[in-house]
Image 1 (cartoon, each protein chain N blue to C red):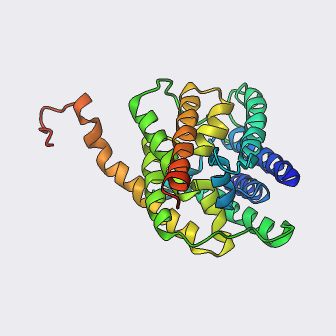
Image 2 (image 1 turned 60 degrees about the horizontal axis):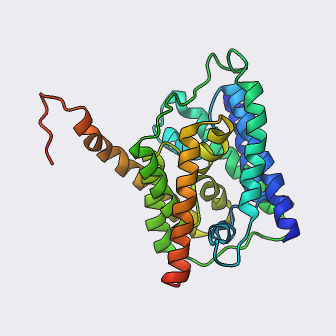
Image 3 (image 1 turned 45 degrees about the vertical axis):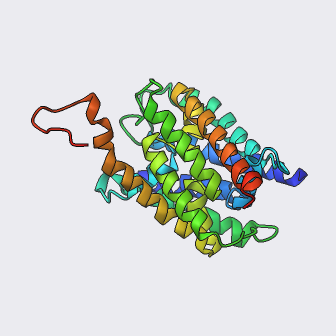
Length: 152
Length: 139
Protein backbone atom coordinates (compact mmCIF):
# COMPACT_ATOMS: atom_id res chain seq x y z
CA UNK A 1 0.00 0.00 0.00
CA UNK A 2 2.78 2.43 0.90
CA UNK A 3 4.35 1.70 -2.51
CA UNK A 4 1.10 2.74 -4.20
CA UNK A 5 0.92 5.89 -2.07
CA UNK A 6 4.48 6.74 -3.00
CA UNK A 7 3.71 6.11 -6.68
CA UNK A 8 0.75 8.50 -6.41
CA UNK A 9 2.93 11.25 -4.91
CA UNK A 10 5.66 10.68 -7.51
CA UNK A 11 3.06 10.82 -10.28
CA UNK A 12 1.64 14.02 -8.80
CA UNK A 13 5.08 15.67 -8.88
CA UNK A 14 5.64 14.44 -12.43
CA UNK A 15 2.32 15.79 -13.67
CA UNK A 16 2.83 19.07 -11.84
CA UNK A 17 6.28 19.40 -13.44
CA UNK A 18 4.84 18.77 -16.90
CA UNK A 19 2.17 21.40 -16.26
CA UNK A 20 4.44 24.10 -14.83
CA UNK A 21 7.00 23.57 -17.62
CA UNK A 22 4.15 23.72 -20.17
CA UNK A 23 5.30 20.52 -21.86
CA UNK A 24 1.57 19.69 -21.99
CA UNK A 25 1.36 22.34 -24.73
CA UNK A 26 2.52 20.50 -27.83
CA UNK A 27 3.35 23.78 -29.57
CA UNK A 28 6.11 24.32 -26.98
CA UNK A 29 7.58 20.90 -27.71
CA UNK A 30 7.36 21.42 -31.47
CA UNK A 31 8.88 24.88 -30.99
CA UNK A 32 11.92 23.24 -29.40
CA UNK A 33 12.23 20.61 -32.11
CA UNK A 34 11.91 23.28 -34.83
CA UNK A 35 15.59 24.25 -34.71
CA UNK A 36 15.52 26.24 -37.95
CA UNK A 37 12.34 28.13 -37.03
CA UNK A 38 11.50 30.44 -34.13
CA UNK A 39 13.36 28.19 -31.66
CA UNK A 40 11.87 27.73 -28.18
CA UNK A 41 14.54 26.51 -25.71
CA UNK A 42 12.09 25.65 -22.88
CA UNK A 43 12.34 21.87 -23.35
CA UNK A 44 16.12 22.02 -22.92
CA UNK A 45 15.62 23.58 -19.48
CA UNK A 46 13.03 20.97 -18.54
CA UNK A 47 15.27 18.09 -19.61
CA UNK A 48 18.32 19.81 -18.15
CA UNK A 49 16.63 20.46 -14.79
CA UNK A 50 15.36 16.89 -14.55
CA UNK A 51 18.67 15.29 -15.53
CA UNK A 52 20.59 17.61 -13.21
CA UNK A 53 18.52 16.24 -10.31
CA UNK A 54 18.75 12.56 -11.31
CA UNK A 55 22.48 12.76 -12.10
CA UNK A 56 23.12 13.81 -8.52
CA UNK A 57 20.35 11.96 -6.66
CA UNK A 58 20.69 8.57 -8.40
CA UNK A 59 24.33 8.41 -7.21
CA UNK A 60 23.17 8.45 -3.60
CA UNK A 61 20.05 6.36 -4.14
CA UNK A 62 21.83 3.53 -5.95
CA UNK A 63 24.53 3.37 -3.29
CA UNK A 64 21.95 1.86 -0.93
CA UNK A 65 21.66 -1.94 -0.85
CA UNK A 66 17.96 -1.76 -1.69
CA UNK A 67 15.11 0.79 -2.01
CA UNK A 68 13.37 1.94 1.17
CA UNK A 69 10.04 0.18 0.46
CA UNK A 70 11.29 -2.70 -1.65
CA UNK A 71 13.86 -5.49 -1.70
CA UNK A 72 15.52 -4.63 -5.01
CA UNK A 73 16.06 -1.96 -7.64
CA UNK A 74 14.32 -2.76 -10.91
CA UNK A 75 16.89 -1.47 -13.36
CA UNK A 76 17.58 -2.24 -17.00
CA UNK A 77 20.53 -4.60 -17.17
CA UNK A 78 21.61 -4.25 -20.79
CA UNK A 79 24.54 -2.13 -21.87
CA UNK A 80 24.82 -2.97 -25.56
CA UNK A 81 23.72 -0.46 -28.19
CA UNK A 82 21.92 -2.67 -30.69
CA UNK A 83 19.86 -2.11 -33.79
CA UNK A 84 16.39 -2.33 -32.18
CA UNK A 85 17.42 0.37 -29.68
CA UNK A 86 18.52 2.79 -32.39
CA UNK A 87 15.68 2.01 -34.81
CA UNK A 88 13.14 2.19 -31.97
CA UNK A 89 14.52 5.50 -30.71
CA UNK A 90 14.69 6.83 -34.27
CA UNK A 91 11.04 5.92 -34.87
CA UNK A 92 10.08 7.39 -31.49
CA UNK A 93 11.60 10.71 -32.56
CA UNK A 94 9.71 10.69 -35.86
CA UNK A 95 6.40 10.08 -34.10
CA UNK A 96 7.24 12.71 -31.47
CA UNK A 97 8.01 15.22 -34.23
CA UNK A 98 4.74 14.49 -36.03
CA UNK A 99 2.49 14.59 -32.95
CA UNK A 100 4.35 16.95 -30.62
CA UNK A 101 3.50 14.60 -27.75
CA UNK A 102 5.47 11.88 -26.06
CA UNK A 103 3.88 9.51 -23.52
CA UNK A 104 4.22 11.66 -20.35
CA UNK A 105 2.88 14.99 -21.63
CA UNK A 106 0.09 13.20 -23.53
CA UNK A 107 -1.17 11.57 -20.32
CA UNK A 108 -1.10 14.78 -18.30
CA UNK A 109 -2.53 16.84 -21.18
CA UNK A 110 -5.75 14.79 -21.00
CA UNK A 111 -6.77 17.08 -18.12
CA UNK A 112 -7.01 19.96 -20.60
CA UNK A 113 -10.20 18.41 -21.96
CA UNK A 114 -9.15 18.38 -25.61
CA UNK A 115 -9.30 15.42 -27.98
CA UNK A 116 -5.67 15.37 -29.23
CA UNK A 117 -4.07 13.63 -26.22
CA UNK A 118 -6.77 10.94 -26.13
CA UNK A 119 -6.34 10.15 -29.83
CA UNK A 120 -2.56 10.14 -29.40
CA UNK A 121 -2.72 7.74 -26.44
CA UNK A 122 -5.07 5.33 -28.19
CA UNK A 123 -2.78 5.26 -31.23
CA UNK A 124 0.28 4.93 -28.97
CA UNK A 125 -1.18 1.87 -27.24
CA UNK A 126 -2.03 0.38 -30.64
CA UNK A 127 1.55 0.98 -31.83
CA UNK A 128 2.97 -0.61 -28.70
CA UNK A 129 0.77 -3.69 -29.11
CA UNK A 130 1.70 -3.86 -32.79
CA UNK A 131 5.39 -4.01 -31.92
CA UNK A 132 4.76 -6.63 -29.28
CA UNK A 133 2.87 -8.72 -31.84
CA UNK A 134 5.64 -8.61 -34.46
CA UNK A 135 8.66 -8.60 -32.11
CA UNK A 136 9.01 -12.41 -31.95
CA UNK A 137 9.15 -12.51 -35.73
CA UNK A 138 11.79 -9.78 -35.87
CA UNK A 139 13.91 -11.68 -33.35
CA UNK A 140 13.42 -15.05 -35.07
CA UNK A 141 16.46 -15.02 -37.38
CA UNK A 142 18.80 -14.74 -34.39
CA UNK A 143 17.24 -17.61 -32.46
CA UNK A 144 15.66 -20.08 -34.87
CA UNK A 145 13.80 -22.91 -33.23
CA UNK A 146 14.01 -26.10 -35.30
CA UNK A 147 10.55 -27.27 -34.31
CA UNK A 148 8.95 -24.06 -35.57
CA UNK A 149 9.92 -23.24 -39.14
CA UNK A 150 10.26 -19.50 -39.70
CA UNK A 151 7.78 -18.26 -42.25
CA UNK A 152 8.33 -14.99 -43.99
CA UNK B 1 10.35 34.09 -22.87
CA UNK B 2 12.24 34.83 -19.60
CA UNK B 3 9.44 33.28 -17.58
CA UNK B 4 9.25 30.21 -19.80
CA UNK B 5 12.77 28.99 -19.13
CA UNK B 6 12.38 29.50 -15.38
CA UNK B 7 9.09 27.58 -15.44
CA UNK B 8 10.80 24.92 -17.56
CA UNK B 9 13.63 24.59 -15.07
CA UNK B 10 11.25 24.37 -12.09
CA UNK B 11 9.09 21.81 -13.89
CA UNK B 12 12.16 19.81 -14.86
CA UNK B 13 13.42 19.75 -11.28
CA UNK B 14 10.01 18.46 -10.10
CA UNK B 15 10.17 15.69 -12.73
CA UNK B 16 13.69 14.84 -11.54
CA UNK B 17 12.47 14.72 -7.92
CA UNK B 18 9.59 12.45 -8.97
CA UNK B 19 12.05 10.04 -10.62
CA UNK B 20 14.27 10.25 -7.52
CA UNK B 21 11.63 9.29 -4.96
CA UNK B 22 10.21 6.53 -7.18
CA UNK B 23 13.68 4.97 -7.41
CA UNK B 24 14.66 5.64 -3.78
CA UNK B 25 11.48 4.23 -2.24
CA UNK B 26 10.09 1.72 -4.74
CA UNK B 27 13.21 0.92 -6.77
CA UNK B 28 11.37 1.77 -9.97
CA UNK B 29 12.27 3.79 -13.07
CA UNK B 30 9.89 6.65 -13.95
CA UNK B 31 9.62 5.87 -17.66
CA UNK B 32 6.12 6.78 -18.76
CA UNK B 33 6.03 4.62 -21.91
CA UNK B 34 6.86 1.58 -19.78
CA UNK B 35 4.45 2.82 -17.11
CA UNK B 36 1.55 2.62 -19.57
CA UNK B 37 2.62 -0.74 -21.01
CA UNK B 38 3.03 -2.22 -17.53
CA UNK B 39 -0.29 -0.81 -16.32
CA UNK B 40 -2.09 -2.32 -19.31
CA UNK B 41 -1.04 -5.83 -18.31
CA UNK B 42 -3.58 -5.36 -15.46
CA UNK B 43 -1.37 -7.61 -13.35
CA UNK B 44 -1.67 -7.32 -9.59
CA UNK B 45 2.04 -6.60 -9.19
CA UNK B 46 1.75 -3.69 -11.64
CA UNK B 47 -1.17 -1.93 -9.90
CA UNK B 48 1.13 0.74 -8.51
CA UNK B 49 1.56 2.00 -12.08
CA UNK B 50 -2.10 3.05 -12.16
CA UNK B 51 -1.51 5.07 -9.00
CA UNK B 52 1.42 6.83 -10.65
CA UNK B 53 -0.63 7.56 -13.78
CA UNK B 54 -3.49 8.81 -11.61
CA UNK B 55 -1.01 11.09 -9.87
CA UNK B 56 0.08 12.47 -13.23
CA UNK B 57 -3.51 13.48 -13.93
CA UNK B 58 -3.87 14.96 -10.44
CA UNK B 59 -0.67 16.96 -10.81
CA UNK B 60 -1.73 18.24 -14.22
CA UNK B 61 -5.16 19.23 -12.93
CA UNK B 62 -3.63 20.87 -9.86
CA UNK B 63 -1.47 23.01 -12.14
CA UNK B 64 -4.08 23.81 -14.78
CA UNK B 65 -7.01 24.56 -12.48
CA UNK B 66 -5.14 25.80 -9.40
CA UNK B 67 -1.75 27.30 -10.16
CA UNK B 68 -1.69 28.29 -13.83
CA UNK B 69 -1.28 32.05 -14.41
CA UNK B 70 -3.19 31.56 -17.66
CA UNK B 71 -4.79 28.48 -19.23
CA UNK B 72 -2.44 26.21 -21.20
CA UNK B 73 -2.89 27.00 -24.90
CA UNK B 74 -4.69 24.15 -26.61
CA UNK B 75 -3.43 23.88 -30.11
CA UNK B 76 -5.41 23.06 -33.19
CA UNK B 77 -7.21 19.78 -33.51
CA UNK B 78 -4.82 17.52 -35.46
CA UNK B 79 -6.35 14.04 -35.44
CA UNK B 80 -4.20 12.54 -38.20
CA UNK B 81 -0.97 13.78 -36.68
CA UNK B 82 -2.11 12.15 -33.42
CA UNK B 83 -2.99 8.84 -35.04
CA UNK B 84 0.20 8.55 -37.11
CA UNK B 85 2.53 10.12 -34.55
CA UNK B 86 0.98 8.22 -31.65
CA UNK B 87 1.26 4.87 -33.40
CA UNK B 88 4.93 5.44 -34.27
CA UNK B 89 5.70 6.66 -30.74
CA UNK B 90 4.09 3.54 -29.22
CA UNK B 91 5.88 1.22 -31.63
CA UNK B 92 9.24 2.96 -31.19
CA UNK B 93 8.97 3.21 -27.41
CA UNK B 94 8.53 -0.53 -27.04
CA UNK B 95 11.14 -1.37 -29.68
CA UNK B 96 13.72 1.00 -28.19
CA UNK B 97 12.82 0.22 -24.56
CA UNK B 98 12.07 3.77 -23.53
CA UNK B 99 10.88 7.28 -24.21
CA UNK B 100 11.83 10.85 -23.25
CA UNK B 101 11.45 10.10 -19.54
CA UNK B 102 12.79 6.54 -19.40
CA UNK B 103 15.87 7.16 -21.53
CA UNK B 104 16.11 10.90 -21.03
CA UNK B 105 15.43 11.70 -17.37
CA UNK B 106 16.21 8.31 -15.80
CA UNK B 107 18.66 6.73 -18.25
CA UNK B 108 20.89 9.79 -18.47
CA UNK B 109 20.77 10.04 -14.65
CA UNK B 110 22.12 6.48 -14.47
CA UNK B 111 24.82 7.35 -17.03
CA UNK B 112 23.47 4.62 -19.32
CA UNK B 113 25.24 4.47 -22.67
CA UNK B 114 22.16 2.90 -24.25
CA UNK B 115 20.01 5.79 -23.08
CA UNK B 116 22.47 8.41 -24.29
CA UNK B 117 22.48 6.75 -27.73
CA UNK B 118 18.67 6.64 -27.70
CA UNK B 119 18.29 10.30 -26.64
CA UNK B 120 20.71 11.54 -29.31
CA UNK B 121 18.95 9.41 -31.92
CA UNK B 122 15.41 10.56 -31.14
CA UNK B 123 16.40 14.21 -30.76
CA UNK B 124 17.90 14.15 -34.26
CA UNK B 125 15.03 12.27 -35.93
CA UNK B 126 12.46 14.47 -34.16
CA UNK B 127 14.19 17.69 -35.29
CA UNK B 128 14.51 16.36 -38.86
CA UNK B 129 10.83 15.35 -38.82
CA UNK B 130 9.71 18.81 -37.68
CA UNK B 131 11.96 20.41 -40.28
CA UNK B 132 10.29 18.32 -42.98
CA UNK B 133 6.72 18.81 -41.75
CA UNK B 134 7.07 22.55 -41.10
CA UNK B 135 9.55 23.79 -43.67
CA UNK B 136 9.53 21.27 -46.53
CA UNK B 137 5.90 20.15 -46.64
CA UNK B 138 4.70 23.29 -44.85
CA UNK B 139 2.08 21.76 -42.55
